[in-house]
Image 1 (cartoon, rainbow, N blue to C red):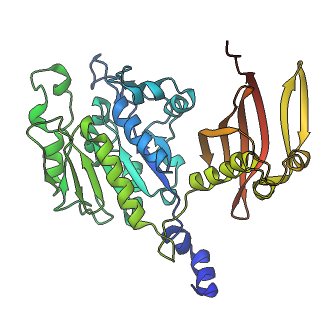
Image 2 (image 1 turned 60 degrees about the horizontal axis):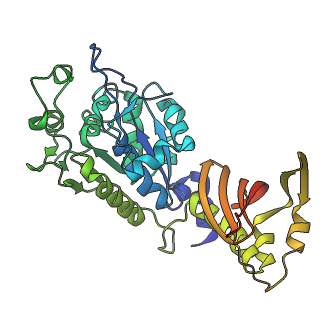
Image 3 (image 1 turned 60 degrees about the vertical axis):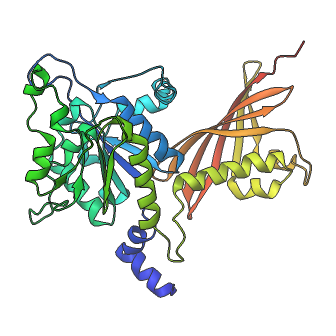
Amino acid sequence: MNKLIVLILVFTGLYSQSFYAQKNILFVTSNQDYYGPTKISTANHFEEIVVPYDVFTKAGYKVDFISPKGGAIPIGYINASDSIQKKYLYDSWFMSKLAHTRKPDEVTANDYAAIFYSGGGAAMFGVAEDQTIQKIAREIYGKNGVISTICHGTAGIAYLRDENGVSLYAGKKITGYPDRFERKEAEYYKTFPFAIDKAITANKGSFVYSDKGGDGFYSVDGRFVTGQDPSSATKVANEVVTLLSKNFKEPNGTATKSDSDQIRETLLDYIEGTANGQPERLRKVFHPNFNLYSVANDTLWIRSGQKYIADIKVGQKSNRIGRIIAVDIEKDAAIAKAEIKVPNWRTFTDYFILLKYEGTWKIIHKSYSWLATPKKE
């Protein structure tokens, strides 16, 4: 692309939005603790949060959470015997995100390629009528983004319209939890402000569903991806990823690399560079003033990054085995955790601070600890 054109597009903001839209997805949750005015507890559906979250993050997307009031949200419908749910239930980093959701006016729609409405009974309250959330969804959709919902989360788009009051999904197939499957004699149901299928139909959508239920039914119509119930969570998330990979590409037609992808590449340069005797890979990703910090004999031990790199001999491979455990990103700052195993010696846990400047993520700090590998009999 002509450099002058690129400069013009960057100045107007069109280049970053069209070609380099950040690989971020915004999850919408609810603060509602009870069904309407009753004392019957309700919550956000944990499985409908963690299953899509797992798919999105593994695909390289960063996920942020909002709720109408911000702060902590109630979670429920938890199955601790399910491996994915158990994984995130005991992940303090992830659970902290649910304890500190953002308020809608604290996020910028341009930062997101998709918006996802999670379900649970709580989703019936406080979300659909929130004008700021509606505006965010409208702006994401207007930038070629995706709108996705699951189960009762579909209630969140009940009133979704464009600036002229026209339904964003007029004539499109939308699914969610069908009213026919609700227990209409139950007290919880009597508190619902509306029936999801009727609200979607009233807003010119074509509500569709499976009579079976629990069979993974979902619908993709344009840039709307919706699921009927928890059984569709993985399918819905995968369809969102597929759509985004098609919608957001660089000028040469390749998919945009997310910040998460770039950080993982940076960390792999560190992990593989030390294991394979490639000091040039470390010089590429370490800030020149990078230091390493640890504690030995109750004393802080500081080592120069330059000295560390100098000890990596070209072509001298080691039996170190590394893996990335977690990455958390906020704009141009990130923290990461990795595990490095040296068989029959030690297992190291590394914590990194990374910053993005001049278009590149650099490791500026590393703290670590280690445990000795138990000797075999």
